Image (cartoon, rainbow, N blue to C red; front, side, top):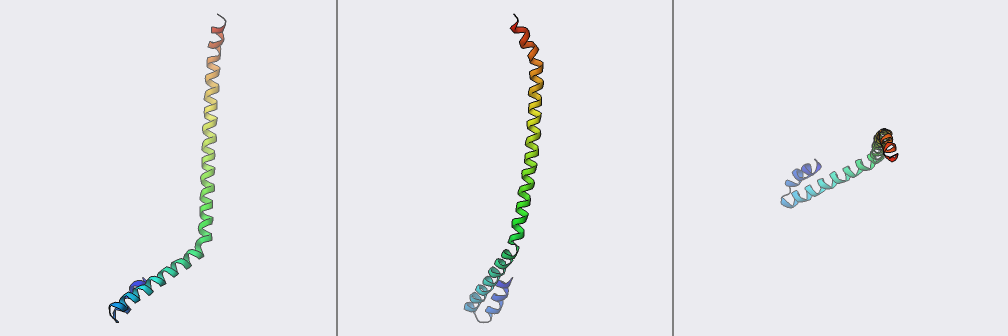
Length: 91
């Protein structure tokens, strides 16, 4: 935005003025963006930490559910197979 304005103003002074104006405009844009970045950095870090914590909780709940399900299936299979194993060992 500022680069375009600087280039337009610089055009009045010829090609060197155009380049100089564009350079000043880019510099203003760059410094403005850096200032905004510094002001919003803490908010950004806070948002990222909340996202990470939420993802960790979801992942933990999913893993706990799957582990409980696997243990239940293994226990059920063991209870069903145990009588067959005991009957074969009596022979």
